[in-house]
Image (tube, rainbow, N blue to C red; front, side, top):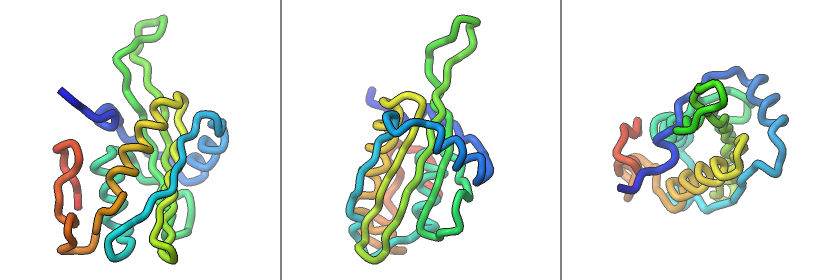
Length: 152
């Protein structure tokens, strides 16, 4: 039974300054980054935020005043336990920069484990690549990738 990694993410609410601080503390060696085409007929920030919140299950963070930068925070829950028997979790932070001038996205994901960062980055890239978020667009009303509520 295939299941995506974001199924195990729970949202973590945090203020913008806290997001910026933690994002800066996670080394670039634990970062996954890519640039992809937005496709469709433009960037629709409310729909993109809904995808991150409902599809990826991350809390939105107001880490910047730039309307074209969307930030999210979550905790990836593993099945492993630490020495005291508590479940282990991996913090994951997402920064999505939307460029309306060239219709592209830059996705940057930092996590305390590189594999988690890569998985979230790949899932988001696949969701954003070539999707028309315009109301009534070709895939604008398509369901989420994992069968969960889309919020779109």
